[in-house]
Image (cartoon, rainbow, N blue to C red; front, top):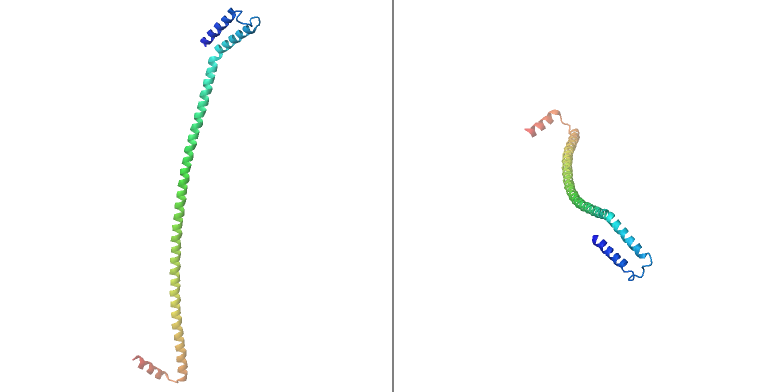
Length: 170
C-alpha cells in the first residue's frame, strides 16, 4: 500500500513538474486524477482492514458451511449404510421366519395326518368289532330261529331235550 502511494506521488510530481511533457496541462484532468487517486488511497487506508476482515470472515463462513455440508453428507451416508444393514438383517429375519413357518406347517401337517390315521384305524377297529358283534348276534338269532323251528317240528319233551344236551355235554 505504501509502495503504491509513493509511486502515485512520484508520478504525479513528475507530471506536474514538467508542464511541456503533458499536453493536458491546460485542462483539469490531471488534478481530477490526483484527487481520485487520493480519494482511493484514503478509502483504501480507512476500509482496507474492514474489507479484508469481511472477506476473511466470508471465506471462513463459506468454508464452515461447506464443512458442515460435508459432515452432513458423511452422516447421511453412514445412516444410509446403517439402514442398508438393517434392511439386510430384516430380510434375513424374514427368511428365517418363513423357514420356521414352513417347518411348523410340516410338523402340524404330519401331526394332523398321524392323528387322522390313528382315528381312521380306531374307527376301522371299532367297525370290525361292531361287525363281529353283529355277525355273532345274527348267527345266534339264526341258530335260535332254526332251533325254534326245529323244536316246533320235533315234539320233544323237556326230559328228552335234557338228555340230548347232557349226552353231548357229557
